[in-house]
Length: 473
Image 1 (cartoon, rainbow, N blue to C red):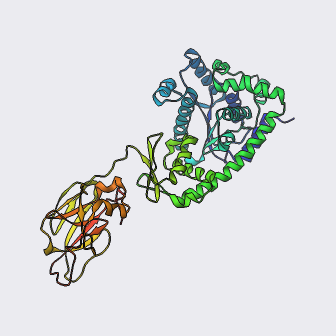
Image 2 (spheres, helix red, strand yellow):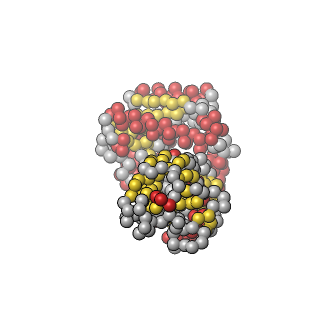
Image 3 (tube, one colour):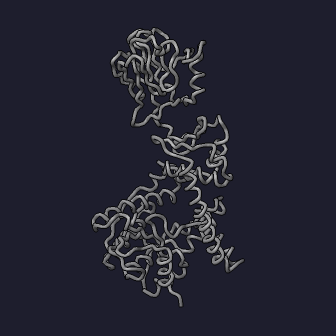
């Protein structure tokens, strides 16, 4: 006869949940599943671990009942000789403040405190934090209920694969056990547990699935649970493969520059739409972990936007996406836009432009000149000192090097693909009202160095090293 111990051991070994000497923090609510997990771990039934402790989070949602659960868990841990930490947190207030439902808010709070507590346990034990594991008591029934709930509300392959046996430091030793296995095991021990009355409230989606939807399905098809679990396993395996491919494409086609996610449009457009959607989503989540619940419609919009030169859209979690020439850029909406601080430039001199960096002017050698988008040599006698340094202004025109006539500065910036958001950080160097140099883009013709030039001034724009990804020629 297969016991819950056999099932849990097989899951632990198959998914390599525990390493020898690992530090385990068990999440115990007092319900049957978590109590069974604690009893198995405390008895060393799954694998000998270096240190075992318990975290109980009191959500404060059921008044005296929540307090009674807390006291009961404390007493059980004391009887088993397992150290117990209790955290109290106003989950309802947190849910209201963050615009979350109670279930989602409670889950976030539990895992936030669990990660912190596990780090502290590892540090206290002298073990690397990577050796820590958070053990939670999800069962096969939880997987099935989550599968049905997501099927009803709508989810992709990743969502329908349901609860993963291992995710980061979180492990689920009971993931292949049924709830009847759990209660049978506890009955064999004479072990009681706590019942949360809200689990019977069918106005909540999970309770409705458990008490109304699933019984109807299993009455019609008694083998549904077995086939559903098999389907979830297949979906999870295929989803993992696709996720691995998408991660590889994201590494190749995207990058993060100073906190901004930059996606190269052309290569992403060569992918199939499903893979493009996965790739973009993978890149967004890697750059902005807070966007973990980015919805399908937003991923779809981003894929559409990659093919639209004029695309711009606000996203949840304080993000904004906008196409700039050959890239789609996603940044936090509160990111600072660099604005140049104007000033006067002498020779020699070093002028601080604030967020736009610095300009350095030195005496050059006659007959020689520097080249490059961020440096220029000018005829020092062809300009009026000091030079004025400011930003592009409405109606500005200049005569670019090699041209007879003038051209609008705005058109030059467009031709050079200088993003609009960075134009107020592009230094414009002027002499007596005429533009001498549009830094990073083009010098003017009228002050070029010629064989007759007797004094040369070399000017270098040093972009800020800490943040601004200024315009390029």
